[in-house]
Image (cartoon, rainbow, N blue to C red; front, side, top):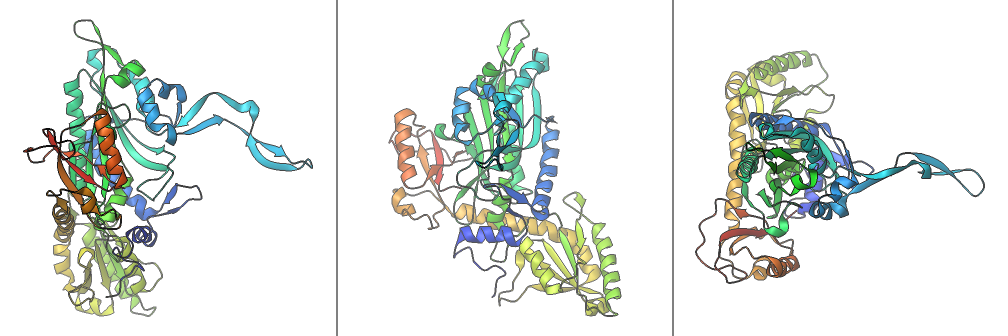
Amino acid sequence: MKHALSVTRQQNFAAWYQEVISEADLAEESGVRGCMVIRPWGYGMWERIQKLMDAEIKKAGVENCYFPLFIPLSFFEKEADHVEGFAKEMAVVTHHRLVGARNEDGGKGKLIPDPDSKLEEPLVVRPTSETVIGAAMSRWVQSWRDLPLLVNQWANVVRWEMRTRMFLRTSEFLWQEGHTAHVDRDDAMQETMRALEMYRAFAEGPLAMPVVAGEKPENERFPGAVATYSIEAMMQDGKALQAGTSHYLGTGFAEAAGIRYQDKEGGQQYAHTTSWGVSTRMIGGVIMTHGDDDGLRCPPQIAPWQIVIVPMLRDDDGDAAVLDYCRALWKELGALSAFGEPVRVLLDTKAAKAANKRWSWVKKGAPIIVEVGPRDVGEGKAAVLRRDRLYKDDGKLNTAFTLRDDFVGQAAAMLEDIQTALHAEAKARLEANIARDVSDLAAHFKGDEAKFAGWVEVQWARPTGAALDRIVEQLKALKLTVRNAPLDAAPVDGACFFTGEPAVERILIGRTY
């Protein structure tokens, strides 16, 4: 069996990941370290994520808005824990104009910041928007009648990462960030958990990516948060990917920003706030959850094109009949509905060899690829390739030669079956690779980052302070972190794996991206 990619997942997972991105035309380098150009197929996936997620956000009564890219440094300085958590990643603007310097011989040299254009206050390029949105909320919230206040924005953010990888950890990325203010803790916690469940259902649904939802330990909380919750997905190399987070911020940000309201008794109270977000990191998760040694396998719900029709043209008189046949098929398929939406169908008429176009769409992960040649036209058939079942047991392409009418009648159900099959495959892998009987983490992970070891679940007493610091360092030496405490974990029945104290919950431990 000859695969479309030059490197397999087993040979080098990191190199495989980069090759999938390149060969699937998802993204490319931009010329700025850590920043990427997202190409149409990759951005098409993000648009699908945006559309489906935005509908869920609005169902919850959250309204979209937009806030500035530049945030005064003083806004961050009001919240000490928050600024400390992001300080090393902040990009800062200090001048607003450049001038041409002079060389020693009087000629023009490099452009430099104009000393006379120094800003009165440095501006931080948005790493997250709690501070600037908090300032707006302090103006918008006056009375208990103004609460809850529920807003969201789709935007880009900048976090100056030292070690970058496309989609997973980039200096600039796209995301949505929800920010809400509430009368009390209970209402804010209800919103925190609603957002977490929205993310869990979205990952398991449109992304076909199984996740574990749970609370992060104290050392993994969002800077300034009282509690942080995450969804964690297992990639095919056994590492964890934090695919979304939801934070209960308490009143700390409200106190810093002055978000106060008059309660029903006439007193002044600080609002309880939340924030929650997912990003283009989800695309990286989809690649590493579903990709195979031929490229990406894109879940139908987020595929920009769910069915791609490839006419097999020969530059002769028969091409017109093939194109007419394909156009009619394109129209019939486009009239179908799957997942409650019209089926997205592309007729690929680009001037290239049919076999080359087929493999291009295989690498991109188009869920269904249909090839039509002159013989198919004469017999009223089509050659159908399901991307999730690319090969037969003998290693040959698993192409189904089917009557056109039969395929049209089955196409919508086939897309839904592909979605279900991708999720089932990933779910089985996740469940099979969580170990619950490990007594020695070092022996289990063997200190070898390349070894597939999955995750380990242990019992946990929620240590704090110096005890937690010691555990974090112990895990760090093994390149491990606590991912979260699963909300649906079995009840505890023993002692903490690390301290021997009575356990209060179970946690997942693993290597991570």
